[in-house]
Image: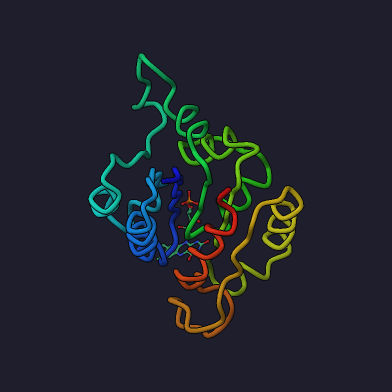
Length: 178
Ligand SMILES: Cc1cc2nc3c(=O)[nH]c(=O)nc-3n(C[C@H](O)[C@H](O)[C@H](O)COP(=O)(O)O)c2cc1C
């Protein structure tokens, strides 16, 4: 059993995180879910909480416990962090070292752990030089990027930017778990 942090961000593909959480728990892993405020607009924390079997984390300052600082203890305990789907916004924040919510703060504190990022966004957002530069920065730090698929996008366009298939994401995770 490995401990995996599943970070979910505000993409239309957020519903697919439920399938990923289910696959990871079925494989015997403990999944600690962290959702951004935007992610919770797309999929209910209740769904993720039920699938993962644990409380979903989202608000940094509501979770100050006496016995530990939750974002630090979660990061320390994690064997791997996964961000799926990853918005252009979270990728930019990670590349800049921003820590302004529960997810970004935890991921910064997880320095040295394997981090798998699964971008999902509109083709133009993905092609933007800022996004491409940010992805390259994460790669240069050793982050694993699960490249998005080409296909029908929620915005009605056909192009690259759809979240990778769950099987490919799970395979990448298993490759990076030691
Ligand atoms: C309907 C809708 C769909 C969206 N889908 C995406 C998406 O797939 N990828 C993305 O990068 N941003 C998407 N966004 C924009 C993000 O939700 C927005 O940038 C938000 O600030 C991201 O916050 P977060 O990274 O903290 O979750 C979408 C917004 C809306 C309203």
